[in-house]
Image 1 (spheres, rainbow, N blue to C red):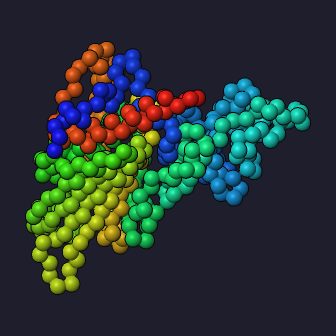
Image 2 (cartoon, rainbow, N blue to C red):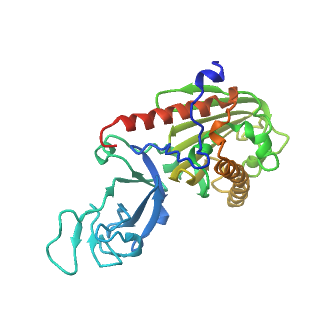
Image 3 (cartoon, helix red, strand yellow):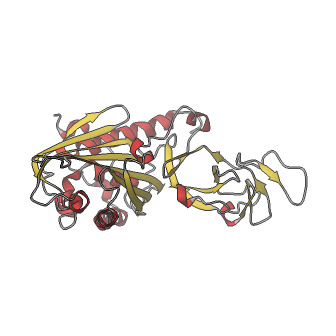
Length: 367
């Protein structure tokens, strides 16, 4: 394994006092909302990558995303209403269709060609509404990196929720790429204390993956009730996590029970999705989902698991927001030397991929 200095990144993952760190590429699919949040007849405002966007549904139920600014007098369209397939500005009644073009002005029949708002490509997959924030013509050559299990609720029992974060999105991505923090941040919740060795790491041009194996270990507390296994049962655990894109991280946990009685289940699979969309350089829309293939008929166990994850992720939230707040308050933040160790390699590689994407966009004309 290469030493950490060979994969170091020149830029820290968050901005310091008085600094802006726009470390988010635009030519990407980002999650704008949960499907259930975009309701017929209602307008939903969401800030994505520093820009305000308004989402709504047409009469046929198709999700639409427009720039949240009327070009007439800059009123937020989210203060207006849905009229059929259009958004009507609440200031002077201008109406805009799903393509962003003005279709009606109450005071005149002639419509200026410049009366257009930006329309964003949208995809709905499973519980998620994805928006392409970059050059529209590039969207047709790309699909959102949505894990298949999020679309298959017949096999996977899904739970999840939103958890807004007042920190740069990359700090959370690095958090889920280095699970050695489990034994400290989550000592009283997850109680997983055997993440003590650097993982195997696999890197491609667009993704980074860690792999960790735990032989003859105990079943994690978080899965005891849902699986029905007792705390004394020994299992082999296989865990991996992969940064699929700047927008989403997928993780897996698979357990094989070492000694089983005839007819007893031996294999248990769980999946996680960490979805991060920057609202700004210091605020993140974060949604998490987890699925398992053994708890479909255990509603109480699912609710217990959800509450445990909710409490544990609040522990992450406190840590990451405190780090961001400390950086914001310290004018010397960017002058400090950042120390990295072997377990940081997945996060450092994710930084390098991200930096390359941002630099490539800077080099493109018109960006």
